[in-house]
Image 1 (cartoon, rainbow, N blue to C red):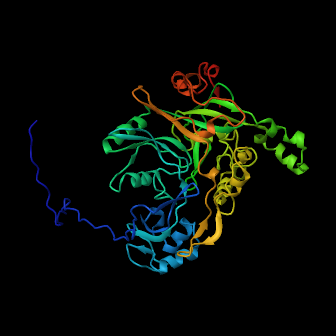
Image 2 (image 1 turned 180 degrees about the horizontal axis):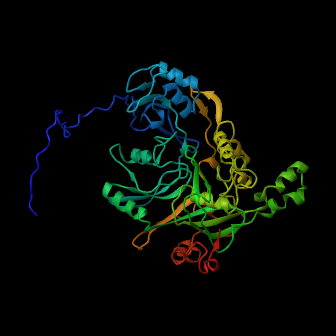
Image 3 (image 1 turned 180 degrees about the vertical axis):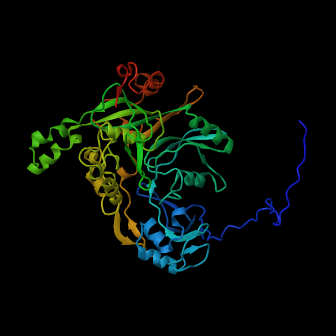
Length: 478
């Protein structure tokens, strides 16, 4: 085929230059943090790691939903941890700025603006328990994360985080690279890379689902024997509160459970009503009869094998099975979920009520799990829960919280083992103290091959969890 040229028709309008170089626009000025103390202002007291209050600046770009709104309206509706009067004063005194400049409280926020908020920061204390080292080489540190310590700076926590504590211990120039994440309240195995290549390689394995994980939990009541498979979908109903529920319309979630031990209550506990007399009122007896969890005596230690990685998956599945983690301040909280604790519930339409009740916890009320009657948690610790004291900081008038009780620093959920599916590596911690036999009982002090829930993976790969074949002969399904 011959190639021919064509004559372009003339036009009276000039052709625009579509390849004009893009002009770089500098980002807006922001207020930088006026003080980043080194060494970090830690101090230890009463078994807690505390941080002395310090000034800090938050910087954030305008979100899409903020565009065209007044500055005071954004703070009053989006940041409700402080009263509106505080934000008015902060804007008028220049503690809150837009693009590094002082503005009026009714300033309209536009796309591309940077809002800065400088404040006197009060971090909650965390446990003084050190970060344990399971393994260390030139590429990776495998740690045993203490319960109650968040991995990254977030929310009310900054220096009291795994990343900052390890940086404090190893030097200001050291940059820890966490490869997996555990909830703040959860303890156990975590991987912290020393350089980017090691982090990338392990993250690829985790994302490729070639890493097996095993947790151990302590739950209320006598958990069924044998392998129990829960495949209820999980849905997040409040991103702000981090609240999730079992929902038929949620995301696919699968967990295998296997009981390691069951510890019934000691005779002195179970017979107290018959020997000492039932001193409950008729109203209390009626209320107790509606609380199915009160009939579940003692507690079980359960090995948990998540086959998917939804947020709070193990906690939600145990709640759905009617055996929530016994000190879980959210999913074992009768004040939030009601007498049934949402056992077997994947259809309720009371999400807004639950969100409202949960949002009050830790402010006017104590976040208390129903199973705090457990003999291992004394009344003293129940009274010593973190809540507002009614006092304010003399520097910034911030409402002050009391120190958390020991029972608030974590929950009975521990990431016990991570292993490569190909068998090239495996890291494991001992059973945590709360998973050992209770006083007066005899039980396992370590895991064995007979109690190993990881063998369930091979079984699960040969099963279709949608009621096909004879899967029910191998697993109790929910």
